[in-house]
Image (cartoon, rainbow, N blue to C red; front, side, top):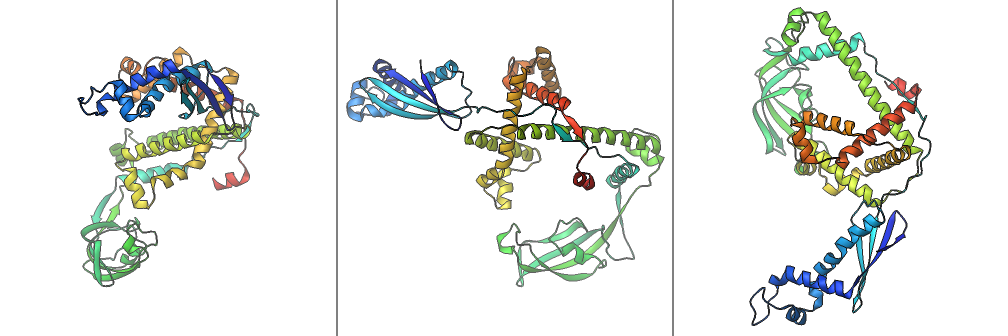
Length: 435
């Protein structure tokens, strides 16, 4: 049995005791675990009797693991006994160890209480981007660009949008610097892949021409020795290529799509754009509904929950970047930022996410929203398809009624319920003008 005391900031103190007999048993367990560490003259390593270990080293040498032996099962039992929803590792305060045993407290952070405000019938602006002939043509132009070719240019100078093949070498104070040289380099004018001013200075020059470009590196340039530095680049143009777009006709459509005519492709693009616009608008509306509902609620969020969410967001970002072949640590070094600074930048969004999740969870409990076996099975099926796994193999891997999946289903159902009850209003004038 244990006693609990509610503290401030969603913390609870659990008071616990262990008898001297229980603590002695824990000391014996600690001795067995650590006996190979102790050396006493006349005894082989691992063969020193318990009493001699205590005599030579003192009983305290066994306390760390003995305390773990006592605390861990008692903590788990107390959490279950008092139905505590713990959100962070507990802090241990050992008050005494003596002939009567061990007295201690565990300070645990628990999920905070949420005071809900209005969550049904909240008014939220709704807007959907209009699909027009212009948006369809923009997509067609993108398709033409993706299928364009580069052809050699003769009889004219470099223009914006051209691709030039150049040699270049950079000098600072008359000395070539590392990383500033390239040969037969393909550079698209207007790509902004070089420092400001470099690409613009190539416009108007001809094939075979050699010239100098004077530039100033940005103050935030990644190479420390070049930040804000003035440099000169010796440049020679070997070739100029221009982008040639295919004709927008039925033949082009047959080459790039499953359709036979331009009209059919236009109709398909319009349909896809309308579906995409609706999906984007609905997702934005769901997010705005959650934001509005959360703003109507009051909750004191424990710092531990925010820190955990900051870690989660950092790991999510690292995983996304890794899929693109980028290491987060390398990216941060390039940006001159530490992992601690990066995590701190996540804090405002982490607070929002934690509060939103707490509010949605509280609403789900109030409305008694639960996941059904059918919904769980459907979610597993969807995940199996996404991961290209056998459904039954996935189910075995994650177990029955996996809490992360059931909580996700409940959260989604709750948000959908709130959206159904919400009132769609016209976007504010400023928002409408921005679109």
